[in-house]
Image (cartoon, rainbow, N blue to C red):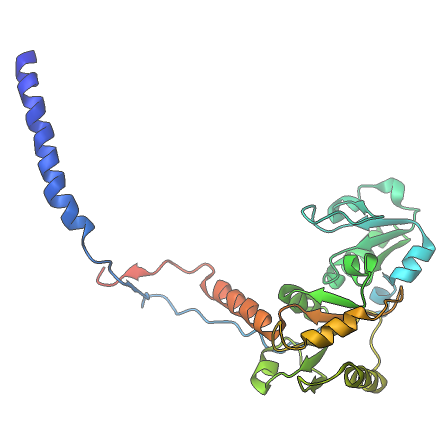
Length: 285
């Protein structure tokens, strides 16, 4: 039996080598089969990310708000309730928002919830809930972490922050050099669309006129939107050089301009359109 196995084993191995040399290369060289959309599933509907109307706030909700000057004057404890992954905020105690209610010993202390700056509605709801639980002196810092640590007269806002803040009604938009089709894709309609050649004096005048026509809410901030990173760069540089007065209402600028915002929207549309959809099958299968 051992002699038989000794002769058969090389024969089996040899057959496997021959098989792999003839069959596998042919399989490996087959052209890739193109993927086909499934006809037995409805095609994804791409959601619209255009203009949206933010919900208003009640008097009870606005009573939760405090600006940075009032918060620092009142003293108490600032609670950084942002996610733990972000950088620490000087002068604030990091505490996850769901854990605040468990700190019963804080009920009688003045507390200021410091968020991302674009989570006003969520923190306002949390404030009302905490007050019902006995935290009578809790408030929400308007502008969040940017307001708490602000040292410049212009805030930089990411496309995601621009979108989230707009849903909470935190921005009033100023376009600079935007085309009509670009304006249409924004989450809100700019109140003023200035030419790309505008200087800082004309911009300040336009903001003053818009505020006279409709004053800024206590939770609102002007958001400047240029075509891209390069356009309006000199204007932005001059605005940033202006000395910042503590407690002043800073301007915000959409980092990367409309180009960056549009890329963000396309990414979100693709994710939303394919969420939960089956993978495409191969043509002919």
